[in-house]
Image (cartoon, rainbow over all chains, first blue to last red; front, side):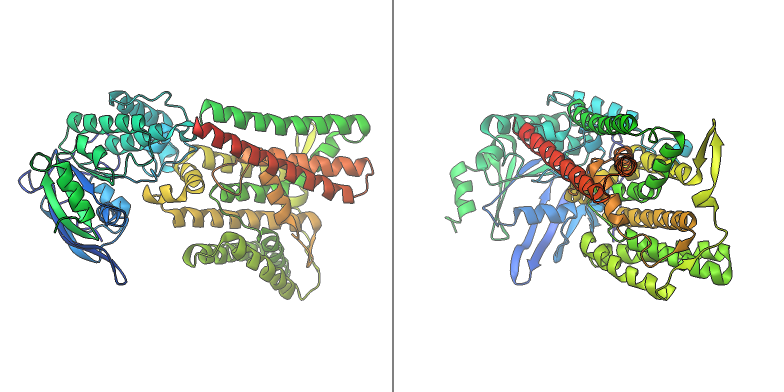
Length: 276
Length: 322
């Protein structure tokens, strides 16, 4: 189960708590050592190691089937790795459920968004983390909808994104709006590590640009130290917001490049395997 | 927590349901002098009570994309256990036996569905068949009389000059409990999420298995209650007790606005729908319409509700693309 030695203050119960670091900011925010995931003889992820510092936005690139989603799912607790270790602020963590990863401040926006269509924005923000009332009504599990609405509204107003209507159900929204809701939800919980799986894959050019702009603004405006891994198979999208690029091919990490020291041609070559 | 748009759609569906109920009542009042009398209206409520009680739990199940078609047999089995145990050991043990029997079936359903991941329709279809047989075994294939158990089924309280049967009071209490549970609690909210998007619910850390198991246990509780009301009303249990009640309840739940695709439904809708079905049955009898027409009319209502649900779904899909 979960290694609780270095557990930071959990933001699981409230949206407004600030993360604290037990071991201080000396250790890297995230360190991965030899992470592998095998499905029978297929090596979806093969001995991947890297570190991630606070305030970094890393683009995780690779062709279809390169292992991008598997890597993110291992970090999100949705997939249990076959081998390898994950360290947060120097403390080893083992996640067996998404909830455990979330309790450590890892928020994930999945490609399929994981929103409930028939709920509005506040209900989706608090999905699985619903706040109950005080006193006897809380003991009966009665929801405090007013508080959830109030907090969600405050969070949404602080975001660069514009929502037409907080009361609108997700099913009435466009693809771009849904993406913004899903990303905002991750930001709302104030995680220290945000994982975005193909945030622009299903969007048109204009919507994708708006979503990317919002992601950039979210990281720069975050009150706490935050890092982000953005998965994409579209290099152009990632290029505009990230500071570093990780490139996976056939489950292996083939390149780890600061954006300032590489070119698009080089990145594409790594993705396709044109260079050795 | 629905949009103004969607709640308006739902509200109109609700209005349509209430409208149908009112129109039916007006029609039968005009056509029969016996319909709009307090005695008859109380009878309508009594006839709807048992179906409404299990329909409330069934609504919760459908909201979470589950279903329990074994409730009719479960009522028969719990009733049979009640009758036999009450005859041999006394009434109190009979009640214990009925609750234990209903909970045993709920437990079997829950374990098969949650632990062994069998589809809930198939699981409860199996228990539907098995427990119909089991109740005949318990009764040795013959009806068993139950003497002196009048309270749940045949006692009436006088409220404002009208005698209200205990069964109707129980119905209203059960509906109220399920209404609060589904609309106001964390549990209810999570059940809607489970039905609307199970994958999102799981990723959000909602304990799907536990929440669904609770719903089956609650279904077992309503079955225990319903079986005792039936036994008390009839004064006996026969090999056919409870037969087809699962279909009546399911019809009511779906006409009431719940969807087999999960995420939709309310106990108030279910209550109104069950009243529509009860009024229809009662009115057609008063008008001396051949009883076969009752079944035809129920089928037409069910089909209408399903088509309505499908139209609403398509409308939602169109809105999505805008």
